[in-house]
Image 1 (cartoon, helix red, strand yellow):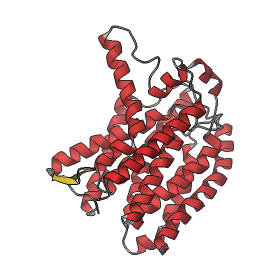
Image 2: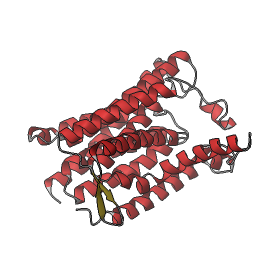
Image 3: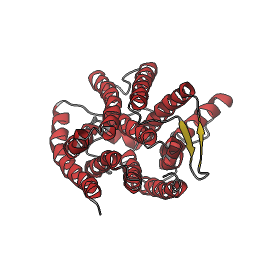
Image 4: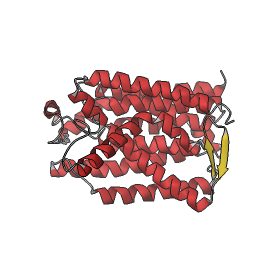
Length: 331
């Protein structure tokens, strides 16, 4: 094992311990601020007992991973390698959008913060800035690689940037939608981060490996507080940050289409929501699912939150293995 691999796994361990410590203080402060989650009135009735659970807990893994990225990535930055920093700062932009949204919810004591239009425009702006920066730094190409088929297509830069911006916004909101029960978005995204870490190391992208490793460690620590019954929720602060991280890593590693298999759960959750709305409108009030997104339908079908977390994380792990097999010929 080379030095960079050791540093990467050390980043995961240090981030886990640091986030675990930060979490104890963050939860106390959130309770003092009375930053309790407002529960959807149309959600499962048993979720009403979660009202008042501190939200915005994503702050803990954002801080934990951030400290590790800066400290353990300092050597790379001195050598002029900033890819890991750009990805973290991009995800942080989405985390800040989520923080504003959460803060407004907490202040207004309702389950609505920023409007859908406000969030979309802010997310689109963040995506465009990130993509332009990555292109300027030479860290982004307009070659669209197709996993499994081992072929690439050159796409016009303008079209590619438009495609990339909307893929990023879509991915961010898909992760946000997955954060609906205790530990679900945490565990699924942990698996995705491990995939990006291992792939980056095997492809000798050691600088990029540092961020997903640190975030994986932070998520493992957050799960200690977030598993059922959750002591804290990540809020939009955390889920939008995670969405930004997943999307940014897909583009930074120059394989955005790999987000389809590794993000299979995110996609299933989003598609269930789209199907539900479309079916409801087409049938004038009938529902395709008992409730959308998918995790709520399965809850109402008798699945426990722990079962959902285990099954969805397992499915993600299987698809991440398949995804790696699909990109073996990339580098």
